Image (cartoon, rainbow, N blue to C red; front, top):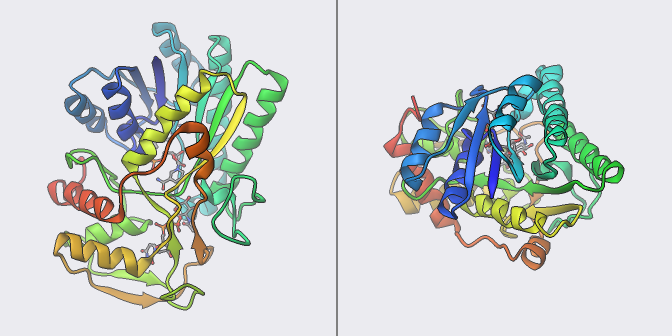
Length: 336
Ligand code: NAD
Ligand code: UD1
């Protein structure tokens, strides 16, 4: 298959490109590098021993995208490009809506003009809001509490409408739980440009000495140890879900929606202890107040993806923390 990967220089996109190339597909990346480095693309080429053409294009740039489509005969698009920081989305909501929604609309226009109708979209477990029960199934009620989450929800709705008006479209909405870890080589990984918002990169940066200590956001949640529980999933398992989704789109299913998680919940302190045990590094932490907007517990029912995609996560928490540390310790300053 010939696959356009938007946001392919980013964290999840780069890992997915490795697997596309390893599986013998041709991949092409467009990315504006607003949260990534072209170095990631070069490293993907080196891991996969294959070429990965890169175009520095903003997905809101219709002409720029059209030129890329002119050069290749794409079968499908995997659409990772977007902004993802919840706090920033509250402060800069227009920027988030323009990037995540306008960007997707422009991409769909250019796809339609080129007769490409297979699309895999990066959604998020954030579209479930604060779920009434766990594990979370795909048919649970949807809601959002911040512009980032709303942008994901709105794009999901736009894409469902698109299929109703133009049934030729085949669209997979993939709702990621909490991606962590890195490629086993330690040469590509998550590279936050600022102080990390998310737990695992924060833990790794404390361990490598870049940050002093982890703030654990609350220990009074109704969970076994009082800290928040999440469904952490190894980024390479997540990446593999995209290949399975691409295969599924070949069967022309219309719009399909899948949770990509492990189905297991781990607390903040579980992750911290697993990291310390696996790496032998100690991680200083203190308990602080809850982070506004956080929920107590979130984990997937991932059985639909297993049934319909033949996909399930195979890597455990030890793999996740070991690979996160390998990347962080080999690249203390990320790609810089
Ligand atoms: P990332 O920031 O590492 O990757 C996104 C990439 O998109 C970056 O390389 C960035 O430069 C690029 N990009 C952003 N806006 C662009 C634009 N207008 N034009 C072209 N390129 C643009 O993030 P990630 O963690 O790899 O996330 C990928 C996708 O998955 C995002 O849509 C994100 O919202 C979604 N997602 C991520 C998580 C997570 O925890 N990482 C969870 C759920 C969903
Ligand atoms: C966050 C986003 C969510 C997004 C997801 C993936 C918020 C409120 N939610 O989810 O919309 O889809 O990332 O990008 O930002 N924690 C600490 N200390 C830290 C960081 C995190 O204790 O420094 C705790 C959190 O309270 C939570 C857990 O670790 O219980 C995981 O946090 P995080 O990695 O930020 O992911 P989510 O909050 O699940």
